[in-house]
Image (cartoon, rainbow, N blue to C red; front, side):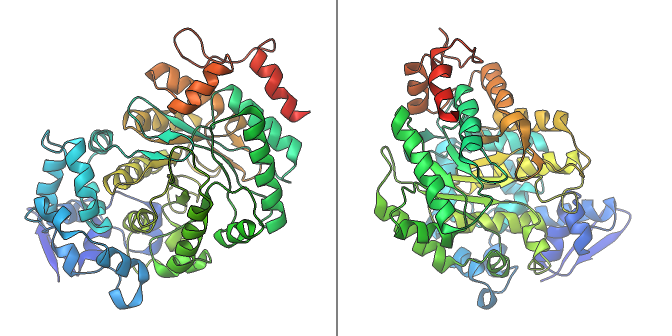
Length: 462
């Protein structure tokens, strides 16, 4: 089905929904690399005009990637909740945008609507929104998940403590964990990206993390971000595994490039659920995504990278995860060239994930060959906090020494919480209070060498 729009000077034709969505997307170096981006600002405006008039139902009738050829498409179509979709089924994309930004779209109505929305609908409406619209809409979406801490509650901002080490050295990891805990990080997860994906290394790291948890009675969940098949083998060895991690993408072929499919994710989900290690809830999956992953695997099917990113959220949604985060600037400037594109993508990913009912976090990050710096990351983290992001990722000194990219520091997230009056997850906040790490106003304060908590936690690195 083709589409046409006129700017008053020229008319533009778009062959199908794939082309229309790609041309309506904000400028993105990855789409330009793929040869599917709008060729001019005029064409971009025309595509957005045409997209605004597309009925939402059309996305149910015209799959961007054929049903027969892609299991992600089959998941999206087969899982669609028609009754949940009914309240907005009569709307066009433009009308849907207006309704989402109105007072009528309450937190409760958005939660009820989420199962009725497909990723393509959500990606489409986001292309008609300014950054402020994405923030306002996301702030109305509330997604709460639980394992040993409760994440996503109003007035809270959780943090993943990321103590990576280039050789998986236990003392180096312990030092980073101690530093993060002293700044109140880790209520989302203490998650290590292992330098080695071996089962033995994964089991050793999981045992170390669980010993730490029990030794200091910390209400936290831990994760070694190994491949899902490595996690399955670790569970077979009775490793103390809390969360199963996997990077995912928006097409079957892209997921295959990660060495996964829906079948192995279901196997891992069933296995981790059988362990019943959560104390306040049972959400036990952790997914990571990022715009450009399908294109880098030559598995994009001519679909723009932001729409493919949102399709990955349909995969995540099927497994009721505790955590989902986009590593927004990690893949590099070939896909998000500069700070403007990174900031926009971070707000898109967070908003679209929340609208689909996911507990979204963001790794506010960039690589050193991108046209971005730490000031730009400061802007994005403040925007996301105002948008109600569930969690952010923090590394010592904002510099990941294993993955070689720039993120946020423990100090950054602590300062953000204090300036906006946001709290850690309630169970974690209670532990911080027990450890004498909160001031009279309930805020984590930067540690001093004489602090009792510092003295106890520094034992970890000895």
